[in-house]
Image 1 (cartoon, rainbow, N blue to C red):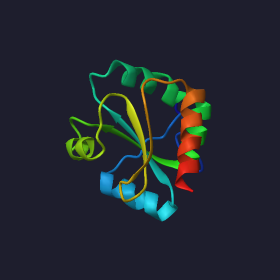
Image 2 (tube, helix red, strand yellow):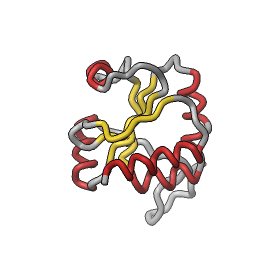
Image 3 (cartoon, helix red, strand yellow):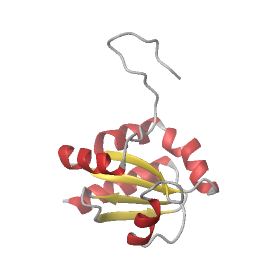
Image 4 (cartoon, rainbow, N blue to C red):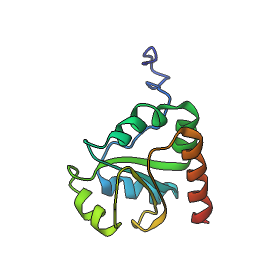
Length: 132
């Protein structure tokens, strides 16, 4: 849903706003803003990944929480240039896996499997606690 365009408003939609840019740019942004990176490690063929993209990630409460607290990155681990390296370094074993990483790519917290919004927010809160 696009908001009417005028100079004072951005195009708004509810849900998680995923970062558009390179992995290096995402890490720099995380460092600059002192935030963790929420990495949705997914593939094009993963059914639960698609379900989360269509439902969980579009929930307003999920978007509000994740957009405020994290730099959100969706990465196809097979197609993204950084995917295979990160898949190996993070010991990825299944999809979907969601990592909370610092700007140096150190995993702070990780969670796996399909989940609804409330559960994902509670996992995000655990990651924030683990960061402290």
